[in-house]
Image 1 (cartoon, rainbow, N blue to C red):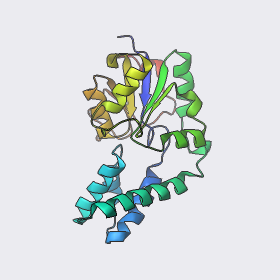
Image 2: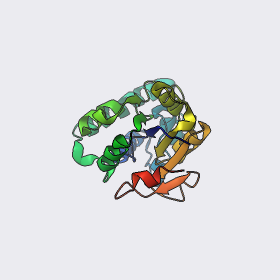
Image 3: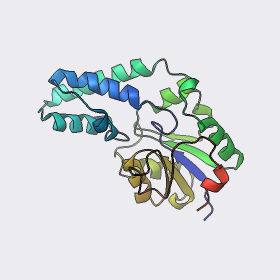
Image 4: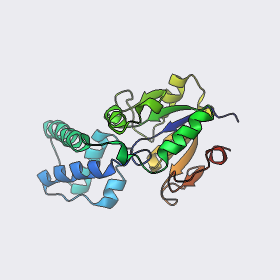
Length: 215
């Protein structure tokens, strides 16, 4: 198969903003006396803001009104934006820039496929935005991963069929989305969590791009 594009999730793959999401959700939980755990936060990776709030409310066994939910979603996002406003290139995960440089040299198109509605801000703050031929984020899709919409729109936007695309993901829902979209999936992180991926690497440090992208 002649693969032509690499589609990347953002959080936990290129930069680590999970800590900021965790902080913002944890603070929000205090409104209904709930303490979000790190383990639960892992389950929110790659999941939309609305779905994340619903999960937290279910864990807390708390029934919120629609008005409360709307208000809290805005509050959470405002705090998250405040937390990420000071992000800079030092927060790019190790090995990412070298990997992007190599795949660009190899002729791959590069796209982002993220549930984050703030993806563009983060890419600008960290200086990564110029690497991307296309950005598909939470503002451009209606369905959350594991639905493949975000990656299918990425392939379509690049003018490619899904089977010519390779997805990089750190979350199980993202890997499932890639597979549902008929794309190869490379997991970044924990092998047990990402066992459905076609290949798994712990991070991008010292990765041989040519070897990794061969299937």
